[in-house]
Length: 365
Image (cartoon, rainbow, N blue to C red; front, side, top):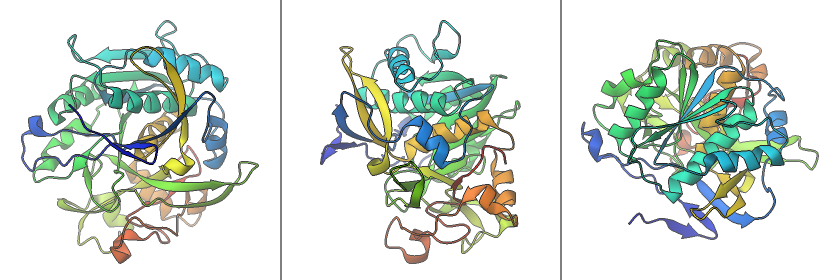
């Protein structure tokens, strides 16, 4: 039986350590996600608010956003329908071909924890890019092998423009040999959550072929305007022990990385205290609203930003941040920390190992 930790009304899914071996069958990924208390009405940050915060268009989207999660979520279409109605979003159903659910096996089982991750990913990817299609690929299990099989299905689809992976675990020797799974000949961009355990490096976010998404805390004024955005204490980040510095970071001159890959690349709201409104039904069909946080939230929404605009890639991110008008691309997060490792745990100007280059201020890079 899977064990979860319950702390002060919030479920915390521990980020399981991947075995330090090339055998992906032994890996068990976990989504970095936090669930708050139930309510009968939406609570937390809403779609219109997040679009104002990050200067995203109210409408739009093209191509297909692939959401990679484990196990089956049989009520996801139902829950998405309630979410869309609550926030006056365009319908996204299997009938109108906005939503497609692809099961990697006919024998796939359900899992309540992963169902919550799926609801967050699907609902908020659609909220940010309502006219893009959503492809939910359900991996047979949460093993590394099965999750990468699901990634492979998505990356080989010509309609997929972005792939969201809100899961991961500790990095391991030989992880770079799996980089080919994060390359699409059709130009899709891959996004992964950096983790919720504070300072530390996770895979697949650490892959040089993936955009690693860290976490922030949003503080909003009553009118929805950002009062401040800080580094979230749970945001994963650091310097890889195994992957060398990619060219986009070398050109930008990432500080103190000793020629190794640093993560995250970018950031997004993640603190459960400023979390997102998500609708989720249990196995009996009884549903409720919850406030959901974690770096899980950032990967699907950055994937949706890719569906909204152009140039959404690490190569462009680092080039844009180096420009004189970099504030038009990113909000630089300069305060907050994710641990007590001094320089590597503190947010600061330009690039840092907690929030990367910062949070989005556009959908065009």
